[in-house]
Length: 122
Image (cartoon, rainbow, N blue to C red; front, side, top):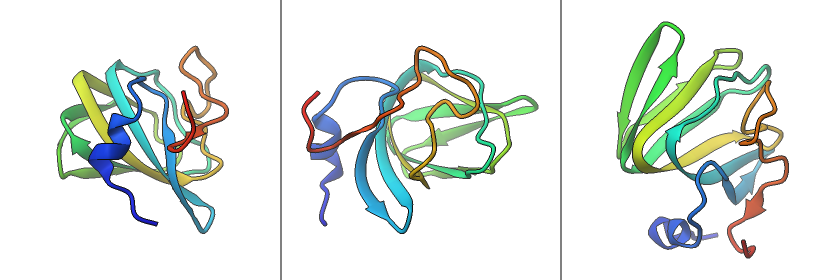
């Protein structure tokens, strides 16, 4: 399955609403755009990998901040509280378990219980 990332990201504009690009071995590759600050949360049983496609953002942890730019990635271990923050829109590829809820251990207005696939209409 071939995915052109520029074209795929161009198919949606919503922030904090991941799209499933591919499934593999119980994992999913998700594309997401975000801007602003997300909610503080953690994932009890899942690690998350963030790979920046375009733009930049800061991953905040309770004890530090890590800046990420296009072409860089960060793995957040399970159980670690974190919050992505983007001053400007950023495009990110997520690699995580198919069961991962975007807001982890909290339910907020940014929670997306059922993710759309890239080929689905908004």
